[in-house]
Length: 302
Image 1 (cartoon, helix red, strand yellow):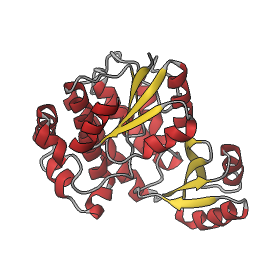
Image 2 (cartoon, helix red, strand yellow; image 1 turned 90 degrees about the horizontal axis):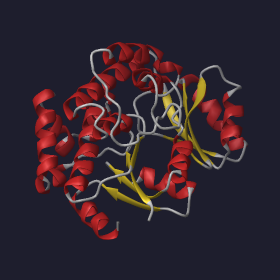
Image 3 (tube, one colour; image 1 turned 180 degrees about the vertical axis):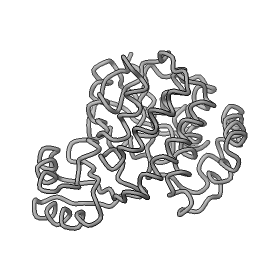
Protein backbone atom coordinates (compact mmCIF):
# COMPACT_ATOMS: atom_id res chain seq x y z
CA UNK A 1 0.00 0.00 0.00
CA UNK A 2 1.27 3.47 -0.88
CA UNK A 3 1.78 6.47 1.34
CA UNK A 4 -0.25 9.64 1.87
CA UNK A 5 1.28 13.09 1.46
CA UNK A 6 -0.29 16.34 2.63
CA UNK A 7 0.62 19.33 0.46
CA UNK A 8 -0.12 22.85 1.70
CA UNK A 9 -1.26 25.53 -0.77
CA UNK A 10 0.56 28.70 -1.78
CA UNK A 11 -0.71 32.21 -2.52
CA UNK A 12 -3.11 32.93 -5.34
CA UNK A 13 -6.08 30.67 -4.56
CA UNK A 14 -7.42 32.69 -1.63
CA UNK A 15 -11.10 33.70 -1.62
CA UNK A 16 -13.64 35.27 0.69
CA UNK A 17 -15.41 32.69 2.83
CA UNK A 18 -12.51 30.24 2.95
CA UNK A 19 -12.34 28.12 6.09
CA UNK A 20 -15.79 29.04 7.39
CA UNK A 21 -17.41 25.62 6.97
CA UNK A 22 -14.37 23.89 8.45
CA UNK A 23 -14.57 26.10 11.54
CA UNK A 24 -18.28 25.33 11.80
CA UNK A 25 -18.00 21.55 11.57
CA UNK A 26 -14.54 20.69 12.95
CA UNK A 27 -13.72 21.38 16.62
CA UNK A 28 -9.97 21.35 15.86
CA UNK A 29 -10.41 23.84 13.03
CA UNK A 30 -12.51 26.08 15.25
CA UNK A 31 -9.79 26.00 17.92
CA UNK A 32 -7.20 26.93 15.32
CA UNK A 33 -9.09 30.03 14.18
CA UNK A 34 -9.63 31.06 17.82
CA UNK A 35 -5.88 30.69 18.43
CA UNK A 36 -5.12 32.84 15.37
CA UNK A 37 -7.55 35.54 16.51
CA UNK A 38 -5.90 35.63 19.93
CA UNK A 39 -2.55 36.38 18.27
CA UNK A 40 -3.75 38.49 15.34
CA UNK A 41 -7.28 39.79 16.00
CA UNK A 42 -9.58 39.75 12.99
CA UNK A 43 -7.90 36.90 11.11
CA UNK A 44 -10.99 34.68 11.02
CA UNK A 45 -13.14 37.62 9.87
CA UNK A 46 -10.71 38.24 6.99
CA UNK A 47 -10.92 34.57 5.98
CA UNK A 48 -14.69 34.28 6.28
CA UNK A 49 -15.74 37.66 4.84
CA UNK A 50 -12.72 39.65 3.63
CA UNK A 51 -12.81 41.24 0.18
CA UNK A 52 -10.69 39.98 -2.71
CA UNK A 53 -8.55 43.14 -2.52
CA UNK A 54 -8.06 42.74 1.24
CA UNK A 55 -7.06 39.11 0.89
CA UNK A 56 -4.65 39.90 -1.95
CA UNK A 57 -2.50 42.03 0.39
CA UNK A 58 0.43 39.78 1.27
CA UNK A 59 0.38 40.77 4.94
CA UNK A 60 -3.17 39.40 5.09
CA UNK A 61 -2.88 36.56 2.59
CA UNK A 62 -0.20 34.59 4.38
CA UNK A 63 -1.71 34.38 7.92
CA UNK A 64 -5.17 33.72 6.46
CA UNK A 65 -3.98 30.92 4.19
CA UNK A 66 -1.97 29.39 7.04
CA UNK A 67 -5.18 29.18 9.06
CA UNK A 68 -7.27 27.59 6.30
CA UNK A 69 -4.52 25.11 5.42
CA UNK A 70 -3.93 24.15 9.03
CA UNK A 71 -7.68 23.90 9.69
CA UNK A 72 -8.02 21.48 6.75
CA UNK A 73 -5.06 19.38 7.87
CA UNK A 74 -6.28 19.24 11.48
CA UNK A 75 -9.80 18.29 10.33
CA UNK A 76 -8.33 15.44 8.29
CA UNK A 77 -6.29 14.15 11.22
CA UNK A 78 -9.31 14.55 13.48
CA UNK A 79 -11.20 12.35 11.00
CA UNK A 80 -8.54 9.64 11.06
CA UNK A 81 -6.31 10.47 8.09
CA UNK A 82 -2.65 11.22 8.82
CA UNK A 83 0.16 11.77 6.32
CA UNK A 84 3.44 9.92 5.89
CA UNK A 85 5.17 13.02 4.47
CA UNK A 86 4.59 16.75 4.03
CA UNK A 87 5.39 19.63 1.71
CA UNK A 88 4.11 23.17 1.36
CA UNK A 89 4.28 25.61 -1.52
CA UNK A 90 5.96 28.86 -0.42
CA UNK A 91 4.04 30.07 2.66
CA UNK A 92 2.51 26.58 2.81
CA UNK A 93 5.90 25.32 3.94
CA UNK A 94 5.42 27.18 7.25
CA UNK A 95 2.05 25.47 7.75
CA UNK A 96 3.64 22.12 6.90
CA UNK A 97 6.45 22.88 9.36
CA UNK A 98 3.93 23.45 12.15
CA UNK A 99 1.88 20.38 11.26
CA UNK A 100 5.08 18.31 11.36
CA UNK A 101 5.54 19.25 15.02
CA UNK A 102 8.74 21.21 14.38
CA UNK A 103 7.09 24.33 15.85
CA UNK A 104 3.83 24.89 17.72
CA UNK A 105 0.70 25.96 15.84
CA UNK A 106 0.94 29.35 17.57
CA UNK A 107 4.61 29.85 16.66
CA UNK A 108 3.93 28.80 13.07
CA UNK A 109 1.16 31.38 12.84
CA UNK A 110 3.36 34.10 14.34
CA UNK A 111 6.18 33.21 11.95
CA UNK A 112 3.99 33.29 8.84
CA UNK A 113 2.39 36.58 9.94
CA UNK A 114 5.80 38.19 10.25
CA UNK A 115 6.91 36.60 6.97
CA UNK A 116 3.92 38.11 5.19
CA UNK A 117 4.63 41.56 6.63
CA UNK A 118 8.28 41.43 5.58
CA UNK A 119 7.51 40.24 2.06
CA UNK A 120 4.81 42.90 1.67
CA UNK A 121 7.29 45.55 2.81
CA UNK A 122 9.94 44.28 0.38
CA UNK A 123 7.38 44.29 -2.45
CA UNK A 124 6.46 47.91 -1.71
CA UNK A 125 10.12 48.95 -1.85
CA UNK A 126 11.00 46.87 -4.93
CA UNK A 127 7.78 46.19 -6.88
CA UNK A 128 7.60 43.00 -8.88
CA UNK A 129 5.01 40.94 -10.71
CA UNK A 130 4.72 37.24 -11.39
CA UNK A 131 3.53 35.34 -14.46
CA UNK A 132 3.14 31.64 -15.12
CA UNK A 133 4.77 30.60 -18.38
CA UNK A 134 2.98 27.71 -20.05
CA UNK A 135 3.90 25.41 -22.96
CA UNK A 136 7.66 26.00 -22.67
CA UNK A 137 10.29 23.89 -20.93
CA UNK A 138 12.05 25.19 -17.83
CA UNK A 139 15.26 25.45 -19.87
CA UNK A 140 13.51 27.59 -22.49
CA UNK A 141 12.16 29.89 -19.76
CA UNK A 142 15.60 30.20 -18.18
CA UNK A 143 17.06 31.16 -21.57
CA UNK A 144 14.40 33.84 -22.09
CA UNK A 145 14.97 35.22 -18.58
CA UNK A 146 18.73 35.44 -19.21
CA UNK A 147 18.11 38.25 -21.71
CA UNK A 148 16.78 40.46 -18.90
CA UNK A 149 18.44 41.87 -15.81
CA UNK A 150 15.27 41.85 -13.68
CA UNK A 151 13.30 38.76 -14.75
CA UNK A 152 13.91 35.48 -12.92
CA UNK A 153 12.54 31.90 -12.97
CA UNK A 154 11.09 31.38 -9.49
CA UNK A 155 8.70 28.40 -9.38
CA UNK A 156 9.48 25.14 -11.18
CA UNK A 157 5.91 23.86 -10.96
CA UNK A 158 5.53 20.98 -13.42
CA UNK A 159 6.42 20.06 -17.00
CA UNK A 160 5.37 22.97 -19.19
CA UNK A 161 4.81 25.43 -16.36
CA UNK A 162 7.46 27.69 -14.85
CA UNK A 163 6.63 30.88 -12.97
CA UNK A 164 8.81 33.97 -13.33
CA UNK A 165 9.09 37.14 -11.28
CA UNK A 166 10.05 40.38 -12.93
CA UNK A 167 10.18 44.14 -12.73
CA UNK A 168 7.05 45.76 -14.21
CA UNK A 169 9.16 47.68 -16.74
CA UNK A 170 10.62 44.46 -18.18
CA UNK A 171 7.78 41.98 -17.89
CA UNK A 172 5.76 43.12 -20.96
CA UNK A 173 8.73 42.61 -23.28
CA UNK A 174 9.38 39.25 -21.64
CA UNK A 175 5.76 38.21 -22.24
CA UNK A 176 6.19 39.09 -25.92
CA UNK A 177 9.27 36.88 -26.04
CA UNK A 178 7.28 34.03 -24.48
CA UNK A 179 4.60 34.40 -27.13
CA UNK A 180 7.24 34.47 -29.85
CA UNK A 181 8.69 31.21 -28.52
CA UNK A 182 5.29 29.53 -28.68
CA UNK A 183 4.40 29.86 -25.02
CA UNK A 184 1.75 31.62 -22.97
CA UNK A 185 2.25 34.01 -20.04
CA UNK A 186 -0.52 34.26 -17.44
CA UNK A 187 -0.43 36.96 -14.69
CA UNK A 188 -0.74 35.65 -11.11
CA UNK A 189 -2.81 37.13 -8.25
CA UNK A 190 0.09 37.90 -5.94
CA UNK A 191 1.45 41.11 -4.50
CA UNK A 192 5.14 41.00 -5.36
CA UNK A 193 8.07 39.31 -7.09
CA UNK A 194 8.43 36.46 -4.62
CA UNK A 195 11.22 33.83 -4.54
CA UNK A 196 13.56 36.16 -6.43
CA UNK A 197 16.29 38.70 -5.60
CA UNK A 198 13.47 41.24 -5.11
CA UNK A 199 12.98 39.53 -1.73
CA UNK A 200 16.59 39.59 -0.50
CA UNK A 201 15.92 42.09 2.31
CA UNK A 202 12.84 40.14 3.44
CA UNK A 203 14.89 36.92 3.51
CA UNK A 204 17.60 38.56 5.60
CA UNK A 205 15.07 40.05 8.03
CA UNK A 206 13.16 36.77 8.31
CA UNK A 207 16.36 34.96 9.24
CA UNK A 208 16.68 37.33 12.21
CA UNK A 209 13.03 36.72 13.12
CA UNK A 210 13.59 32.96 13.14
CA UNK A 211 16.34 33.36 15.73
CA UNK A 212 13.54 34.08 18.20
CA UNK A 213 11.99 30.64 17.71
CA UNK A 214 13.01 27.12 18.64
CA UNK A 215 12.59 24.74 15.71
CA UNK A 216 12.72 21.00 16.37
CA UNK A 217 13.22 18.09 14.01
CA UNK A 218 10.00 17.39 12.09
CA UNK A 219 8.10 14.36 13.39
CA UNK A 220 6.86 13.73 9.84
CA UNK A 221 9.27 13.94 6.87
CA UNK A 222 9.07 17.49 5.48
CA UNK A 223 10.38 18.53 2.06
CA UNK A 224 12.18 21.83 1.51
CA UNK A 225 11.20 24.28 -1.25
CA UNK A 226 14.82 25.39 -1.45
CA UNK A 227 16.48 21.98 -1.90
CA UNK A 228 13.58 19.85 -3.14
CA UNK A 229 14.64 17.25 -0.55
CA UNK A 230 13.65 16.36 3.04
CA UNK A 231 14.77 18.86 5.63
CA UNK A 232 18.20 18.37 7.12
CA UNK A 233 20.81 20.71 8.55
CA UNK A 234 20.09 24.34 9.38
CA UNK A 235 16.30 24.60 9.10
CA UNK A 236 16.26 28.35 9.77
CA UNK A 237 18.67 28.93 6.91
CA UNK A 238 16.47 26.85 4.58
CA UNK A 239 13.29 28.72 5.59
CA UNK A 240 14.83 32.13 5.06
CA UNK A 241 16.63 31.21 1.81
CA UNK A 242 13.30 29.95 0.43
CA UNK A 243 11.96 33.54 0.30
CA UNK A 244 14.52 34.71 -2.29
CA UNK A 245 15.10 31.45 -4.19
CA UNK A 246 12.99 29.29 -6.55
CA UNK A 247 10.40 26.79 -5.32
CA UNK A 248 11.37 23.39 -6.76
CA UNK A 249 7.88 21.92 -6.69
CA UNK A 250 8.26 19.38 -9.49
CA UNK A 251 11.40 18.00 -7.87
CA UNK A 252 9.66 17.77 -4.49
CA UNK A 253 6.72 15.79 -5.86
CA UNK A 254 8.98 13.47 -7.85
CA UNK A 255 11.04 12.83 -4.70
CA UNK A 256 7.91 12.09 -2.65
CA UNK A 257 6.64 9.66 -5.27
CA UNK A 258 10.04 7.94 -5.22
CA UNK A 259 9.61 7.53 -1.45
CA UNK A 260 6.28 5.77 -1.96
CA UNK A 261 3.67 8.54 -1.98
CA UNK A 262 0.75 7.60 -4.21
CA UNK A 263 -2.00 9.71 -2.63
CA UNK A 264 -1.65 13.48 -2.38
CA UNK A 265 -4.13 15.58 -0.41
CA UNK A 266 -3.96 19.32 -1.00
CA UNK A 267 -4.97 21.19 2.15
CA UNK A 268 -6.05 24.78 1.66
CA UNK A 269 -8.02 26.82 -0.87
CA UNK A 270 -8.40 25.56 -4.43
CA UNK A 271 -6.91 22.68 -6.38
CA UNK A 272 -3.83 24.34 -7.87
CA UNK A 273 -1.38 21.83 -6.41
CA UNK A 274 -3.61 18.90 -7.43
CA UNK A 275 -3.45 20.18 -10.99
CA UNK A 276 0.34 20.46 -10.91
CA UNK A 277 0.76 17.02 -9.37
CA UNK A 278 -1.49 15.51 -12.05
CA UNK A 279 0.83 16.91 -14.71
CA UNK A 280 3.91 15.56 -12.93
CA UNK A 281 2.56 12.01 -12.62
CA UNK A 282 -0.47 10.15 -13.93
CA UNK A 283 0.20 7.29 -11.52
CA UNK A 284 -0.92 9.02 -8.31
CA UNK A 285 -4.28 10.06 -6.84
CA UNK A 286 -5.04 13.62 -5.78
CA UNK A 287 -7.66 15.02 -3.41
CA UNK A 288 -8.24 18.44 -1.93
CA UNK A 289 -9.69 19.65 1.36
CA UNK A 290 -10.68 23.30 1.58
CA UNK A 291 -14.14 23.10 3.18
CA UNK A 292 -16.47 20.64 4.90
CA UNK A 293 -17.85 19.29 1.60
CA UNK A 294 -14.42 18.51 0.12
CA UNK A 295 -13.38 17.00 3.46
CA UNK A 296 -16.28 14.55 3.26
CA UNK A 297 -15.51 13.72 -0.37
CA UNK A 298 -11.84 13.07 0.47
CA UNK A 299 -12.72 10.88 3.44
CA UNK A 300 -14.86 8.73 1.15
CA UNK A 301 -12.28 8.54 -1.64
CA UNK A 302 -8.98 8.33 0.19
